[in-house]
Length: 85
Image (tube, rainbow, N blue to C red; front, side, top):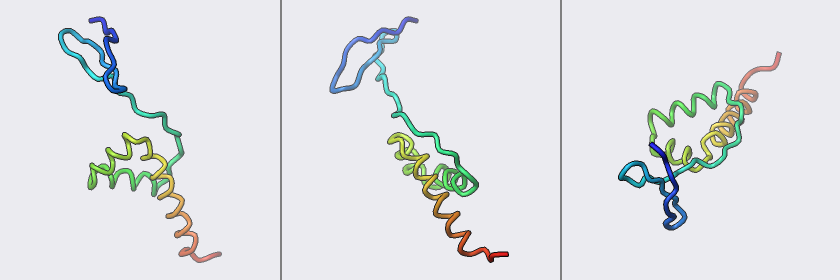
């Protein structure tokens, strides 16, 4: 099956596969930020309990950034709450 670009309609390109035209959609480039415990917990929470927010952030390319911000806030809060030795 050979895929060929056929036409563009309102900035969406379509690929002809057999008899069908399928939108050629790509996710935006995302920065890969390392996530710690709290960032991964936030991502899991969004995926399981708020799939709309998870998919919306994933499609906009802001999911990893959002989870990294949550990680930073949680780490700052844990530094405040943990007693110094």
